[in-house]
Each structure stands twice: as C-alpha cells, then as structure tokens.
Image 1 (cartoon, rainbow over the protein chains, first blue to last red):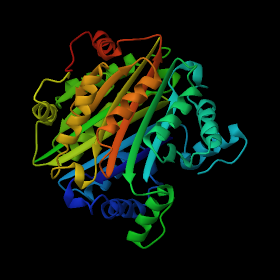
Image 2 (image 1 turned 90 degrees about the vertical axis):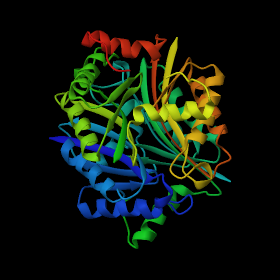
Image 3 (image 1 turned 30 degrees about the vertical axis):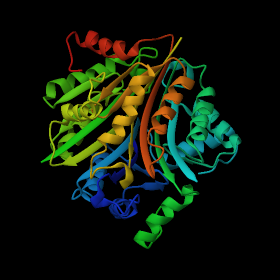
Length: 108
Length: 108
Length: 108
Length: 108
C-alpha cells in the first residue's frame, strides 16, 4: 500500500494563456480535468492536492494537467510529493494528526 | 493594497525532530504558532497557506515558523509566493474564481 | 520543438534512507541513474536540473529517480517545470540571456 | 554555525514585467542585485542558489530580490530551504559529497 500525495500548481506564463494578470481560465481547464478524472483531490488557494496509489498514477495526473494547456507557448509548474508506504487516505489524516497533537481544531 | 499568498511546508529532516517517519509533533509546533499569530491561514494536507499584506509580514511568518524548530539539526522547507497588487482576501477569492469559470462547486 | 526544463530534489525522510542528517547515499543513487540515463542534466547544491524534449520524457526521468529509492518508507520531492515551445538547449541559453542583459559574467 | 541554503526563482506573471514569454529583463534585475549584495550564490538554469549564515540573512536576500520587481502587478516565486547546523560552504560540499559516493565527476 502506497500513498502518493502531490501538491501542485500549473499555469501559463505566456500571454496566450492569460487575461492580463489572471490565469483563472487556463487553471480552471486543468481543475475541470482533475475533477472529472476521479482522482481524490482538494483545491487550495495556491494549488491542488491529489492522492494517488502509485507514482505512475500520480505522474499521469500531472501529464493530464499539462495536456489541458499544452497548446500554450510557455507553462510553469511547481510540485511537491510526499510518498509514504503503508498509509492511505492522507488527504484527511495528515490534518487530523496535527489537530490531535494540538488537541484543538485548526483552520483547514 | 498588496496580497501576498504563501504556501509552505517546513519539517525536520534530522532524527532529532522525527518519530520514525512521522513529523507531526514538529509540524504541529509550527502550526500552533501560526494559528496564534493571527495571520489569516489555511492548513492543507501538504502545507499551510497564509495571506499577508506585505512581503515583510509574509517573511516574518516564515521566520516565526523556523523559530519553532530552530533547535533541530536539519530543517527543510519548500515555499511558493503569489504576490499581487490591488487584491485582498485571496484565501477565498482564488477558489471562487475557478468555481465561477466552471460554473459548479469544486472539492476544497 | 519543446524544451521541458525540470529542477527537482528527491530525498528520503524516513530513517531507513538516512545516515543521521545525511542523505548523500540515497541521493547519489538517484544522480547515478540520471547520469547513466543520457538525459542532459546539471547537478546543483540544491537539486538537479534536467532538460527533456517532451512532458512524457521529463516525467519518466522523475519515475526513474523514484525507482532508485522506492524501497524506502517515506520519500519527499519538490520539483519545478518550465515548459516552453520552439526552444531547446536551455540548460545553457537561460543563463546566457541573463549575462547578455547584464553585460557581464555571473557566478554559475 | 548554521548553513541556510536557499534555491529560488522569482519572476513576474503580469504583462508589465514580460516581453512576450520572456522574463530575462526582470530576472536579470534580481540577479544583478544578488550579485552586488556579496552573498555567496550560484545561478542555475532554473533559479539561484544562495548560502546565508542565518535565517534572517536568507530572508533579507529574498526581500532584496522582491524589491527589484515590486513595481510589477503580479510576481511569483518558488523557494526551497535546506537549513543545517554545524556546517558551512555547502555551495561546494554538497556536490562534492555526491561525487565522493559515486567516485566520479558529475555534470555540475
């Protein structure tokens, strides 16, 4: 059993994918595809967190994300992976473990 | 008016800050300090998103976070800044703008 | 023509992949595999920069990197992608363009 | 004794700081300021690695970097910190330790 948590943001840095300083349209295409892919995810103000069961599955979601904006001249992405054996459902349990240590609710 | 959104994770990579593969105790000390600092924040499964009104304020929160674990031999942190003029309250509005484009609710 | 520049670091965060606070052995296994893979790369004090010709090729290098440490209990990775059409050889040209603007050599 | 290694990239994501898809001019202003600051650094194709002796010093370099582009509407930055006690000069020694393990020179 493997839990591959990935936090990532991906957005165009060329003019063809932007409305002035906004990237909402391009980013929304990526999130739409992730939402429809069925992978467990959570959107945050700075990116999207997904949880996959293998590195191959996690990387395929990143590839799916890029396919939504691959027509654009330049795209930037920053990602973080936390890959842990013998765990699952960490979209929920990682926050719960902090609240357990602090013995109170935390904004999430 | 400036909105400095920061997504970051900070954790020990030396044995003195870990219980086996877990870092919950050290990470909880950081989140406790952020929660008590009053800065607007949101905890996610892969980090913490804060919103400051200046770069100085944002960097002072990162310094506050490190102070909680500065006794440990080795600490790692990865951060992302999205700094935008003439905006505020983006902890809420960035997600709302995606839901507006997609015309439906998204997991967040 | 597509240039996919990736800067990444990958290291164990569980005790089974560390000598105290050091990760040199695990990290060296990853760099050894990248060096032998033939993909253009450059090692830096904080990670490895590779240049691939497609997103699929770039992600396969990340998968190759993880395979070197997939026996370990917990692994962390942070990555950045700069994906740009109609360019190549940016391992060299991105630094050269900065030196051209500044009209002098820069430490690299 | 503390070694704070920081790898970061910072660039405008609004039209006022870009020439089409290029950010060389804005990025060069940041690197010019870092080069003149005297902090030990190394430019890479995907960012700049600096080494500071305290967290305060490291964060002040990030503030200095942002000051060079703070006139622009929107700026993005991704950073990684590796903070380790009882070490110094890791701009050189981290790569050397990998070459020692592999017993051969590596592209850097």
